[in-house]
Amino acid sequence: MTMHDRLSLNQATIKRADLSQALSATAAAGIPSIGLWREPVHDVGLSTACTMVADSGLRVSSLCRGGFFTSDDPGEQQRARDANLRAIDEIAQLAAAGAAGSAPVLVLVAGGLPEASTDLRGARERATTAVADLVDAAAAARVTLAIEPMHPMYAADRGVISSLRSALDIAEHFDAATVGVVVDAFHIWWDPDVYTQVARAGVQQRISSYQINDWITPLPADALLSRGLPGQGHIDLRALTRAVVDAGYGGDIEVEIFNADIWARPFDDVLRDILVATSAMTV
Image 1 (cartoon, rainbow, N blue to C red):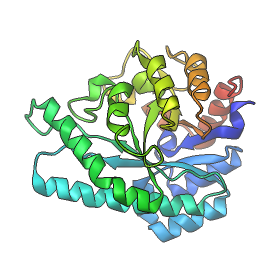
Image 2 (image 1 turned 180 degrees about the horizontal axis):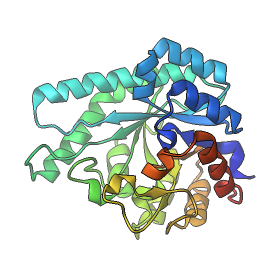
Image 3 (image 1 turned 60 degrees about the vertical axis):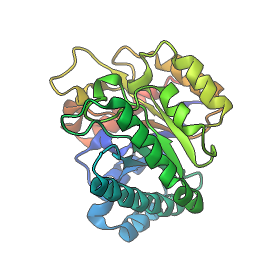
Image 4 (image 1 turned 90 degrees about the vertical axis):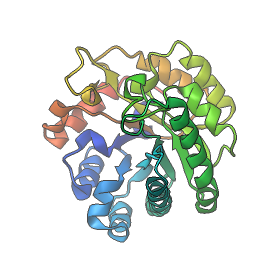
């Protein structure tokens, strides 16, 4: 089977598109699924967004993003909890509005260290506690919390969970239907343990989302924007995709790219390039 039937456009890939534009461009390109972001949903309101998703005929593969719950300030912790509870409700409704096969998956990015903090262990413990605190609400809504490990270069400011192993170490304490992991090629490709951990995630049935992109060099000044189209960089996406599929993952495969040059291009051109880049990949 080609990847096309399982292809999803993560909305961040065409960041400048509003929700209507993103849905229209994705459907027009023949891509059957979309990974949504909360901010464009909030711009139109949840009820309107659900109607738009239903009218598009697209599946919903995930919602980005929850998390950012590593603060050591009790007030900030409560605000993060409230925001994540709202996000759980949002993805439950958006997935219900999407076409058959939509996935009620909320991507969780843990967050970085508090300002001036060096307490990495404490931040990771707070992230684990925060996930545990959301489990009952997620289970009641039939939403999967998908912990996304991030490349270690983001540990200080964005994601203290830095490996697939670490994400699974948290997830395995909970029911697999409620807490899983995101396998994002950009963040985990470098890890010599990655294939062992992908297989482990498969045995536990915890791969909740698979995101593809590429690692391009030289890195730009803003390292967050160092992703390229599949096939443009250094990641062996064929091998990684085969490992993820062999591990039992049967969901959509999101193309998620943060890249200023790609964001500046016409949406239709970007989607056409994505289709070309993924056309030879099999799942």
